Length: 120
Image (cartoon, rainbow, N blue to C red; front, side, top):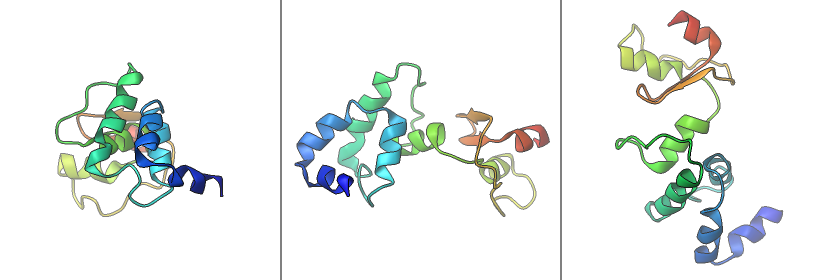
């Protein structure tokens, strides 16, 4: 398809263009091709995209740029991760199936839906 042409351009040109894309769009683009934008050399692209969107808080040092973008812009409730952090019984046994989230807790590294938010 049309995306294949994008992947055929020289990597230097692709990364320069990618620096002007939002972190959410980079995350979606990275999911289209295995390894695309996930190498250590792509860190500057993610950082530039994050800095262009001035409302994003500083990235925690224990997360790399793609992980931080996934936390902020990913889909779905990550309540089992929250259970693990809080050391609740049966941590990580299954993920909540809700695809919409109410709040992102950067400190807990979790996205939480309404149902799980109310339960916690």
